[in-house]
Length: 364
Image (cartoon, rainbow, N blue to C red; front, side, top):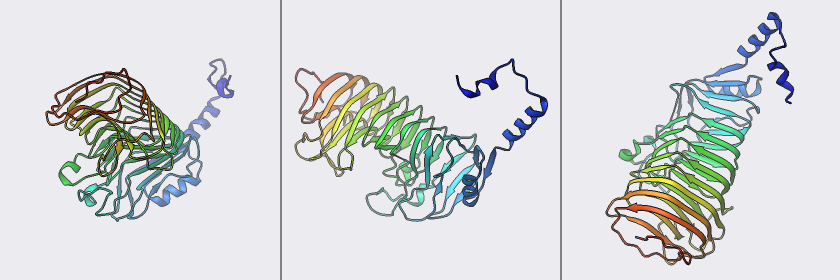
């Protein structure tokens, strides 16, 4: 029995005086933050809740929640904006243990990405900052609204046992004004991560998993952009295991779901489940699994240094536009796959290679 259970015992009576003290303590346990100096003071204080109000982050600086005490709740309750500078960022750091991070009614992180967008993303042109760097343990992020990220929105690195829920990433303006590489969630070297019930409008991957274990992406909606990807190879850690992509919708995306491993790379992709996915008006490919990936585009024959093992595709359904391909598999060293899909509409026929023996996949 937990030590605080005695406070929940209805047979115990507290005096009005003691209850009054407790109410006063509770009322005094929150602090409002309107600038970076107040945030630093709040991190040194003992308040259990930090309310972030309208706040402007000067150019080249970061809204940094590193060193917030464990057990703290951070609530965003205003408009967060950032000064303009060409730099790598990040604009916001969420780092710590046992934190609850929430979005309050009417809040927004406005990256005003149009100031950086030039159609080249992070490949060239203006140097564009990442929006959020996340390094959390035993923590939750819930209800955040982000608009117009300059480039990648969430870089989730070295996280353990976290949930991200009900997040809105709205980079629709990038379709008209040159947004590129505006990834929704990039996950690397992380374990026991759940991303759920979120909506992503963007111009690159909705989700990109580069490495990690026990990562679940479920009940999310990806609109525009490049769809959902497990992309392994070319990093210091190149293993992705026990990945679940479930109950998601990809609407007007370039791809539906991809697994792409680096040409001549080393590592492993093992235990990926892609289940109950709806595709609508995908332009290029509904399901794409390739072993010859390069950032500049696939090239040559697939290599088997990053085998794709224990793959399950179940109830992936929907349509691809006529100029696209429904399914393309082009791999080496694949083992133990199970497949069930119903994707129609694409008329482009691409050769498949490396499908495990005995498995019938409707390529093309």
